[in-house]
Amino acid sequence: MTRLAIVSAMREELAAVLALMADAQQYTVAGREFAVGELHGHEVVVVLSRIGKVAAATTATVLLERFGVSHMLFTGLAGGLATQARVGDVVVATEFLQHDMDASPLFPTYEVPLYGFSNFKTDAALTAELELAAQSVLQRGLLDASTLHAFGMQQAQTHRGLVVSGDRFVASSAESRSLQNALPQALAVEMEGAAVAQVCHDYGVPFAAMRTISDRADDAAHADFLKFVTQVASRYSAAILAQLLRARG
Ligand code: SAH
Image (cartoon, rainbow, N blue to C red; front, side):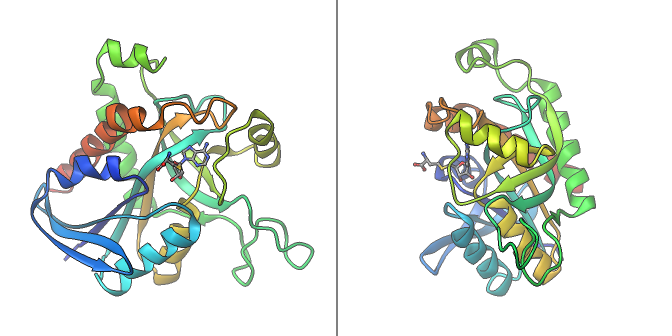
């Protein structure tokens, strides 16, 4: 029996998913509201992660311990680091790293102490399903020309690769450049994914994550976030989740 957790950092993004859930039951644990119900014929638990690594790790742990979820999916926003990760594109994470983890000289920079490595891989099978769903939704061209134009977007692309997380909203060209130089493989930066990946690794539960690029992590990164999430990212994630769940049968 699968019980899929759907986790997101922003309320506006979850709203689109919650609206589609039949007969959701609400539970409050650790100040977080968990909605348990059905989405496209699958049992799901939907919750806001809250922002940052500690908050997201706590939410993930409650999902595993209290709600016994068997799979975990994260949808959210991220700043684009690699040049190809443009605003409106979707990045499907194959692995996560904490860009602000540094216990050197005791451990190599980025390595999580006592794990012996820095990169936490997402589940290959669930990630492949998510990537397929994202590709199929983006190919359909979900947004009309005027929305694309309003956000200066081109036809959206799907990318797969490394996403980095840290407890900082990256909003300057200088910081973005220094992250790109330090971690040239990184496609995007956000604030929760690596924490959830680590918790899921510890519990041996499959995890996959997608992020819509909302900004370029540069001096303009604070630009109208809320508008982007309601008009672009939440529509993408609701459609991609629907596609993924339907494909699961
Ligand atoms: N204005 C929002 C704050 C969003 S914080 C509010 O008031 O709720 C940004 C969220 O989007 C985080 O959850 C993070 O994971 C992601 N994110 C998007 N762009 C980012 C960037 N440039 N740097 C770090 N995180 C980013």
